[in-house]
Image (cartoon, rainbow, N blue to C red):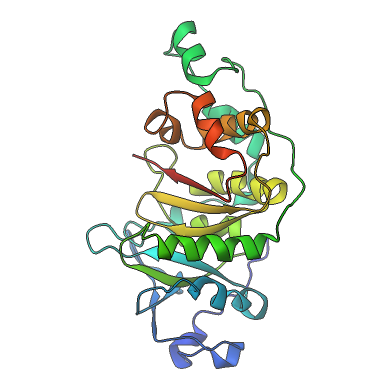
Length: 268
């Protein structure tokens, strides 16, 4: 597969990005990984803290330079840029979302009662992917709204606006070698194949990353509890901690997904 050109090196000589049709604030190029320096910058982030409109202001960079906007948590203790490992990532397009999620739907150690309590109305057999939804909002407009909410509500400590070279928003975590879900899946490209599928079926965008947390905007969320249960099954396979740490069961968690404009995941 041909690689897209990485436009970030141009920012070393042109920090404002004017040659790329951009007008960037002062920022930093990041090439540090857990295995030394990467040959090219993996991302750019602003030096100053993000504002509610920061994500939206960077959106034109996707069309002019193939750079996707992102909010990064740069909390000094556990920044999102720690432990980047791009060399360990495969390519999201080499994986099938249904197969990836089916592989995570594993209850070998649970009893029938435990499975019923946790993932009812489903059982040990993977239920398959939820049907696609008609987009009720423009995906980019919804992403801008969610990004503004992330900043305004203080979801992250020290959020910074960032740009990442990637084929599509769903590929951003793998493109920078993010290892937040390492206790569940180290090759994040496999999870990005799921993000690609959600991008196609639900209009998601990758809005924000913290050390172990991912925030997505959703243009076409489930509209009923029944639809939400189908989506919740995918969420459980994608990030079991979302349900086991925050809700008593898949069914209880599903209620929170109805008409929700954002999905968040945290791997512990």
